[in-house]
Length: 137
Picture 1 (tube, rainbow, N blue to C red):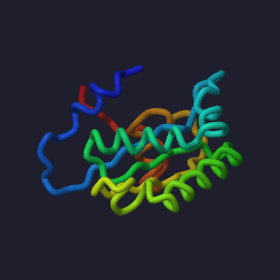
Picture 2 (cartoon, rainbow, N blue to C red; picture 1 turned 135 degrees about the horizontal axis):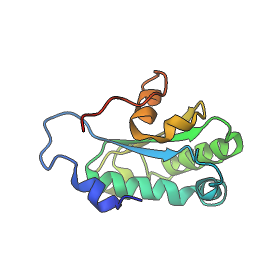
Picture 3 (cartoon, one colour; picture 1 turned 60 degrees about the vertical axis):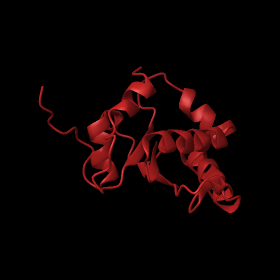
Picture 4 (tube, helix red, strand yellow; picture 1 turned 90 degrees about the vertical axis):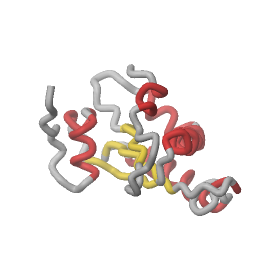
């Protein structure tokens, strides 16, 4: 994998006024992988807490968790955990009493393998076909 701290360092140091967002790839589309779904099934609050910590470090306004459509039970469990975190005041305005506003949204994708690629995932989040964007070399 690519170190998270290095990814976060690419975020602008000074905001230009546009909001920043954290995108979590919970699509788990590689054949034979099943680590993410176990976290979502058994410890969804860890994922939400990780979103909050990463979002704060990146100065993001919200997290979008992209979960594959076939993960119906995992999506239901994660959705319930997100609602519990809002009810406890850990998410939303003044998240965890920090003065920091942070929201978490769950997005169910179509489960296409290509949505595991970052730009394909973002295209899908934006309501388009989950096809990778052309990137300069």
